[in-house]
Every structure is written in structure tokens, then in C-alpha cells.
Length: 302
Image (cartoon, rainbow, N blue to C red; front, side, top):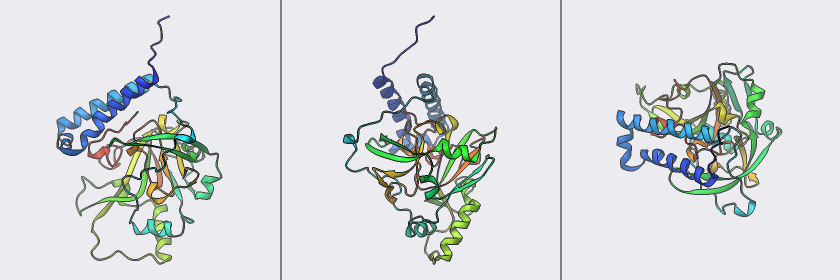
């Protein structure tokens, strides 16, 4: 029998982190011009494929990211990216403490679902204290509580052709101008039926009409995706609590994804809708996420 190759965990994690950092940060600073060229995109894709191959080769689907004792929790978990979505519908939901917010699950499922926060809190929960590693170079340790993504997917029932889980979020990142089909996200230009219902509820509750001087165009809201291997990982949860209290708006309230074996930009905040798909074509520009469509790698394993 051939001896099994073993690599000490710190070395393995360090190698994967370095690989992710090398290709992930290439979209920052002056390197973004290279990342947007055909050669740059191909280079990034080769690095991503290598990262995914090594990660899946060395880690079993059940391998866990390191969990920490409460004594190691960071005194302040740095918010990043969007910290206070200005979308009127979201602000109306937040103003009512998300009492009428619903998480929609649709796409390639047998039973589309709409869960309230109370529904999610009534499901089996998992608490984990893990380190968040940002592609910008900082880290923080937080204690997350939420429902395993596998639990909500089980209740929706995935169809046989399901391959990817796409997260549609509330925060608008930019606006695409009329006719700008290259940058518009087809999955977000027309809201899901459930989001339209929530928008109608917001208007009924007195939400203001858009100001005349607000940017005009189609809002491009944050979107992210993972495959079924990560979706069913035991540490992949939809978190509603941080450090024992309800998730703050700055950290993604009412619900954010935690996929602990990947970098921070994969941890989608302000999740409104989960779409089950057989392909990532048709999601944004096809890269699988907002930042991935701008040069970041889709698989950001650490």
C-alpha cells in the first residue's frame, strides 16, 4: 500500500492562504488593469483552478476550519464593504426590525420557501467561533450562530440538476446605465417575486419615493455563489447572531453567509434570496459573484 501523503495543518493552511492572496489581491491597486485583460483573466483562472484542486485534494468535505475559544474573540469585529445599505426597501425592513423580512429560496428546488427570522431561529442551530480572513490582509475572530445552509436546502428539496447556490443580497454596489448589458446582473435586474412583495410592503408602510437626484439606472446588488460541496459543509451557516447578540446592520443583518474555509468576500451579507442553479451563466457576467466578475477568483479557499 502506498503511504498516504500528510501535510501539517499550519503549512497546508499557509500554502492555501498564500495562493488565495496571490491571485485574490491581483484585482487591487494597479494590478486591476492586468486582471481585466484577457491574459490577466486567464492567469487568474489558472491560479483559481490550482487553488481549488489543491484544496479539494488535501481537505475532505468534512474538514473543519479552526475554531477558537471565546477568550480569543476579537473585541471589535471590523465591518467591511457595505456597512449601511441605503436601498429604501432594505431601510424600511430594518426600521421594522426585519419583522416582515423573508428569506426566499427558489430556482431548482422542489418546494420554494419563504422563511422569516423566527422560522430560521426555530430550526436546528450551530454556533462556531472562527477567524474571518479578508483579502485586504486583516483578520478578526467572531462567534457566529445560525442555521446550517444544509438545513434550509433540505426543506426546499434540491432537484437533481442542482449544482450551485447563489446568494442575492440587499446592498446596491453600483448602477448600470440604460443599455449597459455587460455589467448588469440578469438575476437581479428584475427582482424575485418575493422581493417585489417586500418592496410593496415597504411602500405600504410609507417608504419614500426615490429622490430625483438619485443615480438612475439598474441597481447591481451584491451577489455571490458556492457549489454544493461547500453548501453542505457543516460550518456553512446562515448567521443571524454575532457574539451572542443579533447580527448588527454593519455586519450584515438580518442574515449573512458564513462559509468558513473561504476568504471574506465570499461571506455574503444582507442575504435576501437564495437561488439554486445548474450553471453560473446568467449570474452577473458569469464569474459567480460581484467581485469575481471584477477579477477576483471564484474559489477563495484558505
